[in-house]
Length: 207
Image (cartoon, rainbow, N blue to C red; front, side):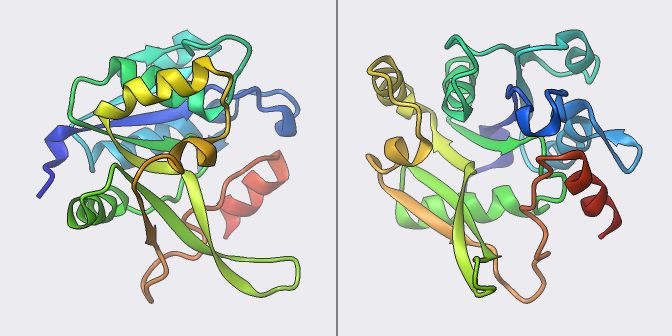
């Protein structure tokens, strides 16, 4: 079994927040607490250590008491820039990523990803969850920012991003990836819901 102490948690808080009017999403309150802090407390229970990837308001994030690192790629290059930053700083054999704007992610997220990674001898374990499509049908959709990675993938990601690659799926598709569905009867249907707007944040608080 992969021990929690062998996993570093990375909180992705480096985006522009453009769909939320440019505010820093991780610092918006969710039930009276900044979303990123809520995420931190939820993640700390599941891993050995946590780091945060952020590109502004660094003092606010540093006040949470964990290391904060800015993107190693310029110009808000997206989640893969955060993955790259985390892998370069990670001191454990594994790293798990979670975004700062999905404050209800499962408390057993890391354990289930780790079990699947080990069982399948995969390089990456990626969460998936049921979502309604435009026709109202439930379909299982991958959640690529919820990933457990082997740290040895750093060299591959450096190469991919240096060649201009920015899409998570295009990179993970190069490696053995196991998809882990979170669709059991007791799973929260809103576990992977993210707040892209202030209205969505209020809806998530009230649900």
